[in-house]
Image 1: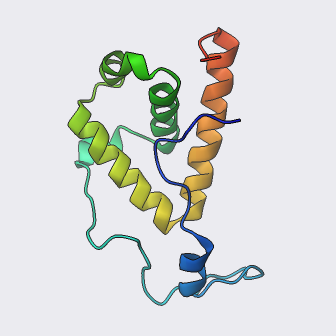
Image 2: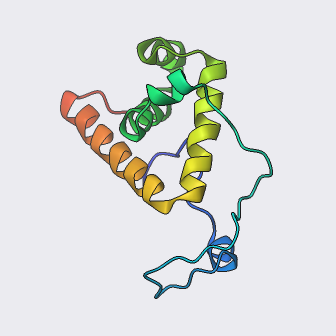
Length: 124
């Protein structure tokens, strides 16, 4: 069993179908953005720019794997709780808009879990 994720999975199939995508489609013809929220979240340019999808994925894994070390993880990544909340919302929106971003995040999470496991820093 995988540990819980700190950001949502891609949008449910029902949302993807409403966006004009079918399971055999190789071209996505989205007529309008279909998002489960109405406002766009903006992380500051410097904050969002300092967190690639891989770096964000690594931070997500560390928050999940070591919840008792939250303050240390925030310090390690140079962010506050408020900035983490903005990053979570920012990346959740990017993943909801583009499944390729979610796939990159998922690969980043898996790679970081493996790296932690090799270092012996995994939980369990």
